[in-house]
Length: 114
Image (tube, rainbow, N blue to C red; front, side, top):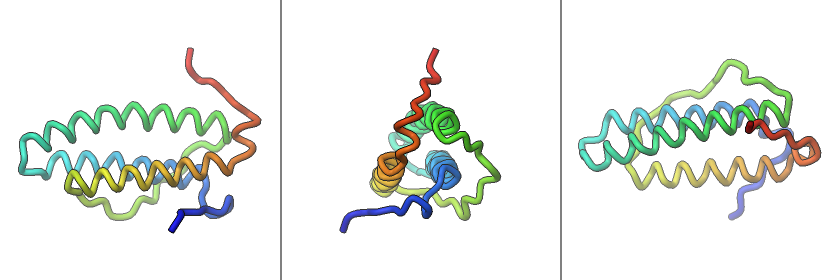
């Protein structure tokens, strides 16, 4: 079953909320794991995702001209490494579908890199 999103059902604000929920999920997983190897891996993922979230947020603001509002992210729970991987992949697909459906984003490319 393919994931499909209607333009009106997923907004830049939803992207902001989802990526920040991911960020907190990774951090909580990092704190709660009992495995040293998983703890180290979660720490590396956390650092990389932190940079990626900043880049996504800044580009999305530039593309959409929508600043993040208050984040309504609900409950955040730690995940096992396998489950976190699936969570990341599902979110990446959701954001990719959102970006593909945003025609205004492609016509208003903004490069925020120096």
